[in-house]
Image (cartoon, rainbow, N blue to C red; front, side):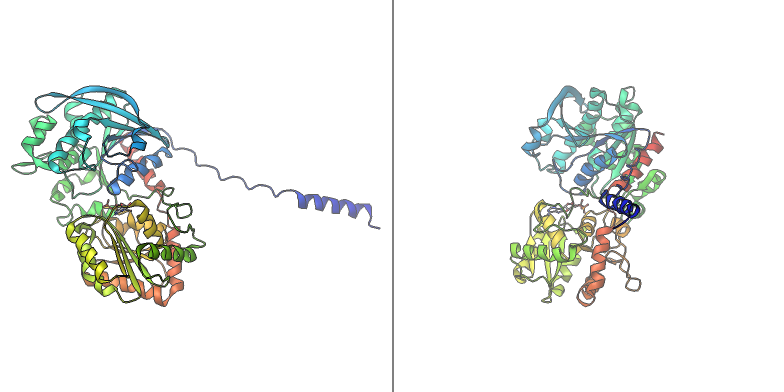
Length: 517
Ligand code: ADP
């Protein structure tokens, strides 16, 4: 018979065995940085209401990330008619007032419609005369008055709502009159003390029009139409140039682009102006919204995946895409994606030149984009010439974009210039290896593959030359076909890379704190 003592020990043991293991202490949420800062974002587009490119993504994701950094954020946008009804119907009327615009002081209606979502307040500036057509842009003749009105109305709306932020963060030329209006027409009003940040998402677009027209629509005093501010040459005024002069701080969306735009090649005729203002110019790289871009939960994919099963599931996505697009169904083909506005900024001349050389029976190319007819037509031509190997989707389609990111092995971004670039970030996050030119944000976010140390995230080339792009693609193909283990390791490394907004939001907050300690 077992003695009492051993019985007791046994009983203790059994009890201990049955007891649930002590819970690991939950990861402590980082305390919010203090003090709280308030920021008004002013820009011309914002996902999901209206988006034509990367600016729309940033206007959506950065405010959300700033909320997590103890910022109070309000996003001010035009209330375009093209905003889907499902959002329009949820907007709540916040008020309206009349505002003088133009040098003859014509009064204009400014309505404010509000929508609160995920901790961010969206205020839409309403005026049918300006915002009832376009998708959302039309042409410069109509867009110039539209954004003269918008910049002034946004500031007037902040005063009207009595919501005075520490920082007004303006984006691109469409909002770049804000710092000038603030300086020239809002002194003595509550908003006057706010500091301004102007972010350049793409220096190519500057809002240039003849001085007479801009002077008429803005009603701004002649003093700001001089060479140091708005005047560009004898005839024209440049809205971005003026905003850069008066902004408290200028940022652009990567460190490399911040350096590049001070040179004539990338400076789009503003390099001297930017060199002059370089003491207040910074680069902060963009992130992506990792909730919106989550391969594990993305409802648009044929097969969801994470880092553990990416290699297997990517093949399922590849087969599904090949089937949907009428490409030859074969999981062993090397699928190269291109998701892009079809303009010469994006390196499409290079792609057009090398495309026939890529089609070798083992490679497929999937294009998604709209833009210049010359590129749309050439990709259509290639689809016809290489049926089954090339598919050109000449359209803007969010769902298809998700599927291509998930199904492709590599994504091409051989841009002539690229302020930041989001597609290479999304690609890496979806386990797709980027092939990029070393410029702007592409250089800052894609570490070139090093075959000796087996490190890096993608394949890169430096000069804008056809054969260098071809060489980069061939290096990628060689690794894919000859050393799949290393390729797969790179896929997983890419998925692990932190491309979220958190880091960038911290840097923006630090910048706001510099302006408003
Ligand atoms: P840019 O702002 O210069 O157009 P970015 O790389 O910063 O380029 O951002 C492009 C964004 O637009 C990405 O989110 C990309 O997925 C999306 N995109 C581009 N073209 C299309 C398209 N034809 N259909 C769907 N999404 C697209």
